[in-house]
Amino acid sequence: MKKKNPWSPRNGLLNDLPPDACDRLSDELQLVEIPVGKVLFEPYAPQAALYFPREGIVSATLVLENGDSSAVAMVGNEGAVGLALLTDGRSSPARYVVQAGGEALVLRSDVATAEFRRGGAFQRIMLRFMQAFQTQVAHTGVCNQHHTVEKQLTRWLLQVHDRIGSAEIRMTQEQIAHLLGVRREGITEAARRLQEDGCIRYSRGLIQVLEREGMADRACECYGVVRREYDRLLSVADA
Image 1: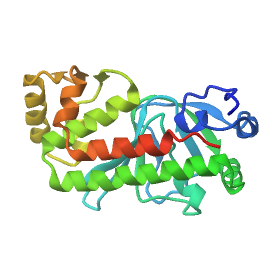
Image 2 (image 1 turned 90 degrees about the vertical axis):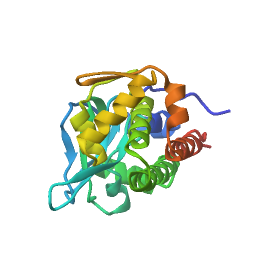
Image 3 (image 1 turned 135 degrees about the horizontal axis):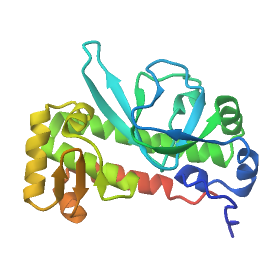
Image 4 (image 1 turned 180 degrees about the horizontal axis):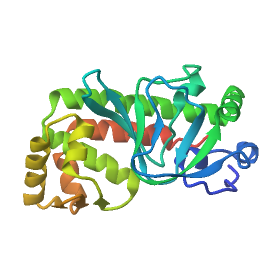
């Protein structure tokens, strides 16, 4: 029988660690605030730490030379930010920006890489998250290319709702349009239709999710595929 985890870091990956890994890492984790707008990593800058969000959302955003950008993935308290340091890649082409503020536990790169190279539970858990994260990146690209703005918005709202655990999402239409890489007018029209159908209530800077099941029915297949993959990979009990 698996021994109960003796700590409560409020992060899905850390929660799954066995007691021996908890003992090694508990004194190394530092609690920090991650306010809205904070850039955790710039493109191609060295990633000197792993961030394990306890609350809030961090977006991985790709920025083109002309300034256009699009978010390709998001991370909440189910995952970690700074994965490149575990693969010796050191950096990533994405900019990691806090979109919903909160707290995170931070693990220095030397401690994180040493634990990863032990080849135990920490490595297995992080590798499973990497696969889930890659699935999200891939399906975000497909969704942005092939699905309507309304379906993209619905997928994005559901993913945010999954991570913040609240029916209220504080973000303007302009911010959402910037993240999705679409015109603001498209977000305005898509939000209007969702509101008319009773799925959300929208006022300036605040979206309230009223009918999650209805939104899930309207969402494209990308949301379901990614959600199932996260559930499959991250709910596996570590031996």
